Amino acid sequence: MINLLSRKTLFLVLILFLFFRPGNLYSQHILGALSAGINLSQVDGDEVYGFKKVGFNGGPSVIIPFGKEGKWTVTMEILFSMNGSTQKSADTVQPDSNKPASYNGYKLNLNYIQIPLLVHFTDRKIIAGGLGFAYGQLVGVTEWENGHRVDSTTLQGPYTMADFQVLADVRLRIWKRLWADVRYSYSIFPIRTRDFTNYTGTQVWTRKQHNNVISLRLTYIFNDPYVRSREGKTKKN
Image (cartoon, rainbow, N blue to C red; front, side, top):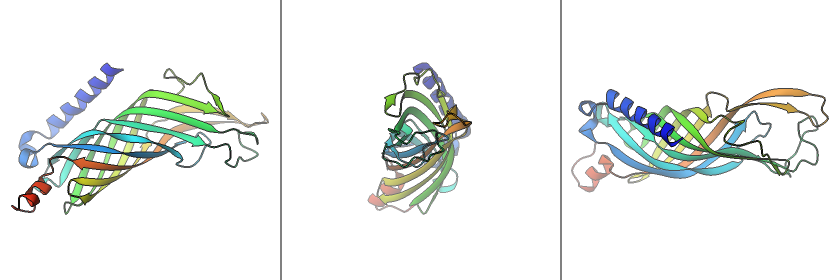
């Protein structure tokens, strides 16, 4: 698994080098950053609804400016991202669902090492919007159904080891090098296909499942050239 992650990381770095060579970089700066925050997640298609699962999201990143005045940037991150879904036993259960009236809750933990690649546009040095994709490698999974651990849910299945997501991201500078970051991500391909049966055994249906995640984070950019220029009283970029 580590070798697989290393090959994919090397491939992404090579793509960045080929398309954004030093001659095209704004002032030839490569910025380093660190992000930390939370995921609010659900798994579409698991018959559990709401962004109720709270987990950690964070890790280091590199930001490569390009184009005129460095308003465009490419960001590559290596994150630990905790996804999943949860439903407490006190939540309302519909009579025609796959859950009995005495249902004792559901919990799914999906932990990924994730490598997002995004392109951002920054306006007035204070707000940035971006789009991109992410590859996620499943490194941990546990599942509880009706209060009992599902022993058949392991890294060998039934959830896919790879999760490819599309991302939308908005960052706002809140103090010098510190940015607030809101991100939405969704699985492009199903992470699982599951058959459900209602608790009377009279109906069967099939659902494709996707990670559906809202991330709220703080990002600190260590060598932000805009902050350096203001602190040095030289110029505003």
